[in-house]
Length: 186
Image 1 (cartoon, one colour):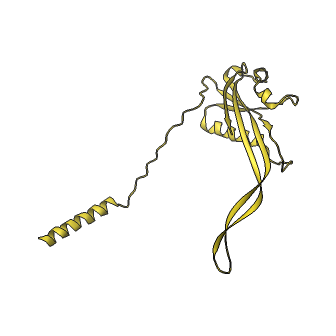
Image 2 (cartoon, one colour):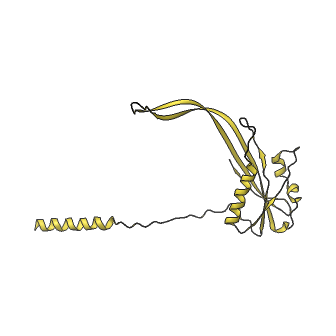
């Protein structure tokens, strides 16, 4: 009787274990919608203005990287793929006698832009802080001795390039130049 009970219990536990550890798995994808920070209702077209570029270049004075073009192309692609806006470029010339921050915040500047359908359009503009600096710091690396195969940590001083990218984005009503939204990414 004891052997029968033990063998029945063993078979029950083995089958329970087998069925609970099945080979099929189910993947569940959970997505939480992000709330938009600003909903621009009533606008059909967005103009991407040239961004004002600021920053210091301590290391490489001759940078062969067009920050304005890269940011605008990324934004254009995102708006075309994920929104219903018609996307257009807006060429803007910033006055060299004023700071870029001053010009971007001037509503008269944005309302004076040559845009045909101002009532249904918004302008996205911004200021980009793109800087590079020389930084000196300690770096720890794990090295292996080729003769003995022993690994150890070696700390050494290194000169490295620090790149700073900060973006201030603005949305303006094309009709009156008023600021609708502002967000910074630093």
